[in-house]
Each structure stands twice: as C-alpha cells, then as structure tokens.
Length: 567
Image (cartoon, rainbow, N blue to C red; front, side):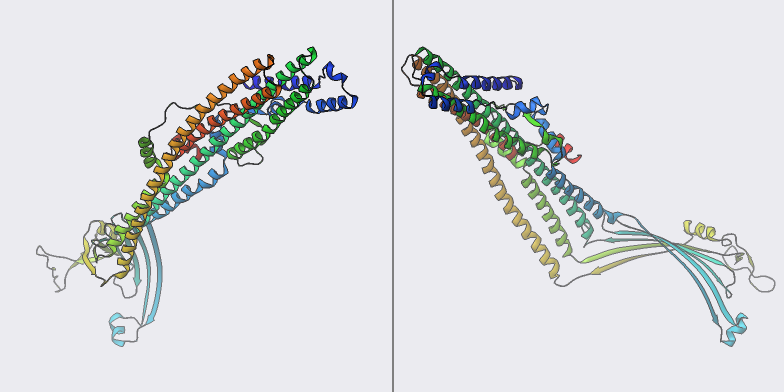
C-alpha cells in the first residue's frame, strides 16, 4: 500500500471510530440517566480524534521518503564513527611516508674562512724566507650529498674546494679541489634486510591493517543502518496492523448497533464492542512509541550532527523486505568469509610482520662484513703557474745556466674552473677499497630477539586457527538462523491465513447466532496477533540475511568504501 493510501485508511478508521463510538442506539436511551451519562462520557473519551506521527509529518511537509541505499549513503558521509576511524589509515600512511624518508637525499654545505698570523722566531727560516712573520688566509667551501640505498648501503658524493693565500706560497692565491665518491655496502649482516627496511616494511603492513580495520568499522555501520531501517519498517507496519484491527472492531461495532436497533442483540454488547474499539485505537497510539524509537535510532546511525535538519524530518522507509529464494551454501559462505573477514586478513598481515621480524633478527645473528670503495679525483690551480720543460723521455730540460727550464702552464693557471677541469678529466685520482669484518661472540641479544619473534608467530598462528573456527561457527549460526526464520515465516503465514478464515467463519456464526460477540472480538485480536507475528518473522528473516552478509563480509562495496574515505 502506498503512503497516501495508508494515511487515508488511518484517517478513515479514526473518523469512523469517532462517529460510531459517539453514537448511542435508541435502546440505550431507555437506560437510567446516570448510566446514560457515563456511557456518553466514555464514548466521548474514546472517540477523541488522534493524528499519527506520519499524518502530522505529511501535513506539515516534513516527511521524507528514503530508500535503504540512501540511508547508507548518508551514514557513510555523515556518521561520526566513520569520521573518527578514517583518520587512522591517514595517520598510518604518513608513518609509512616518514619511514621511507630514510631514502631522501641529504645535502650538507660547509663554509669556513680562516685567517692566521704568527711570528717566525727561527733565524735560519727568516733568512731563507726573507720574512719575520707568517701570514695566511683560506676559504673552504664543501658540498656533500648522501643517500641511503635500497640495498642497505650508502652512497656519498662530496666536493671539497679551497682557496689559500700565504706569504710563504710561490703563487697566491692557490686553488685546490677534490671530488670524493664513496660507496659502502654490507655483504652479510644488514645486506638483505636492516633496521631501516624492516621499519618500512612493518609500516606498510600497519597501513594495510588500519585500512582493514576501517573497512570493518564501515561494514558495522552499514549493518547498523540496515537493521535500524528494517526496525523502522517493522514498527510502521505493526501500527498498520493495529489500524486494520481497529477497522475490524469498528465494523463489528457498527454491525452490533444495527442488531441492537432491531432488537436481535442485547444492548450490553455495544459497551463490550465499544471497549474493544477503544482498546484497538489505544494499541494504534502505543505502536507509535516503537516508530519514534526506531526512527531516532536510524537518524542517529545516519548523522552525527545534532543540528542536522533530518532530526526535524519524519523518515518514511520506501523499500520493502525482499527475501532471496536461496542463500549461499555453508561451504560457499565459509570460503567467502575466510577470504573476506577483516580479522582473518589482519592476522595474515600480522603473520607477515612476524616473518619480517624473523628475517631481520635472523640476519642480525650474522657477522658483519662490509665493503667500502672510495674514488677521489683532485686538482690544483693558481696564477701564472710555471712547470718544468720536459724532453721526449720525460726528463727536465737544462738551460745554459745549468738550471732546469720552466714555462707557463695553461693547465694549472687559473682558478676553480681549472681545478674542476682536472677533476672531471680524472687527471689525478686517488682510490681505495676496504673490507671490514666484525664477529660478536654469543650474540645473545640478537638470538633472544629472534626467538621472541618466532614465538610471536606461533601465537598468531594459534590465534588464526581459533579465528577460523569462530568465523565458521558464526557463518553456520547465520545460515541456520536463516533457515529457522524462513520456516518461522512460513508457519506465521499459514497461521495468519487460518486466522483470517477463522474470523470469516466466526462472523458467519455470529450472524447466525451461534457465536458470541466476545468470540468474534477475540478472533479479531488473534488475527492482529497473527499478522504481527508474520511481519516480525519477515523482518527477522531479512535481518538474519543481513547478519549472514556481515559474517561473510559482503555488505561493503568498493564504491561505499571510497565514499567513506573521501567524505
């Protein structure tokens, strides 16, 4: 039935109830005046018009139709628990970035200016140098680049630059420079894994675990929304059943009044039937409390903002519970649960973390054996530098005065540009290789850490087995609950059909004088109870299917997860 039809039916029942209950048949007019007044007062009290919360919301324009997917989407965007839990994956992601920061390049710039003055007290040196004091100044500007390598080694590139002036130098100023390249690589301990790589790998696993935890929380929110949505559907439909029961009571009262008028029924029956009508309307009113509670629970699951306009709106669920003809078999559901369940996935990641620790601590029990290679081309330059003239055999050429001949050197005359020309030409190069070996006797600290890591893995393996068993039992319970609720719904449907047939029969017997008014009213109440039981069975079956989807972790879709993450 549509929302408008439901409202029209409700209004019609209440209006008819008011008119019928207010009506006093002629036969009753012959009763004593005091009894007449009491009857009219009771009729007046019972016939008070009552507008349901649904009618009031529609009349005020505050009703809002919502499908289940709409409610889930609102919750994913506004629920406070999701807002809180979404920060943990973001924090873990930043931790992973921080751990990877060890691979960042670093540069160090070091600049120094030095001025020095000192007396020369050695007379011989004074005579040789022709000075009585030593004066010098120097500028040093050095650049060093460092980076940690994924192989566990380190690479260093340095440029050392110097400009010196001194009253003892042959040329002033003089420029020297050096490029220093160094590579250090562990060959045994810390080669396959070291503390930095361990930290990065563990941070990556922690990030994945936090994402799984977030998925689990979002899935729980979706289940809460679905359960409260169907609770609201149940509450509204239960009130509808009570309205139908009130309608039957009103029809019975109207029929009894006609019988009293023609004298085929005792007047006391009217009072009995009027009381039943009043009680039926009271049950309609009481059912509203369940609607209000269910609606508030749904709103609480949807939004965390107390000022959200949704709190001033009445939510009308549009979807009706649809029951699939078949559900997954136990083996299929268990297999799906083992693959999807967050606690199992998290434990598998914990086992991977244990493997990382075991590899690391096992590596730390090995001896240290490192290889270091260094390459250092260098150069020098100055103003008007002269070099010895060499013959074809590389020997100095002697001049007429018996002294070696010198000539201007273009290669060494200049500033830092000449220095780096020599450096990058590798004209003058130093290099070295080095091996370093270290052995720790006993190495108890590393061995104890390794043993602890292995025990931690054994513990997580046992926990995983226990979790597998618990998940299997949960899935089994969910499937068996579905089957029980399916049978319960079938039985409730049959019971409701029988109650409808019984009410039809009781009405015919009553018309033939073979049944009492009390029996008819009792059958009407039984029919309302049967309808309520059928509806409850239907809702329970729907919620048990939701529980199965939760146990197999199939409630959450990738699209919903993206909505929750990007809210």
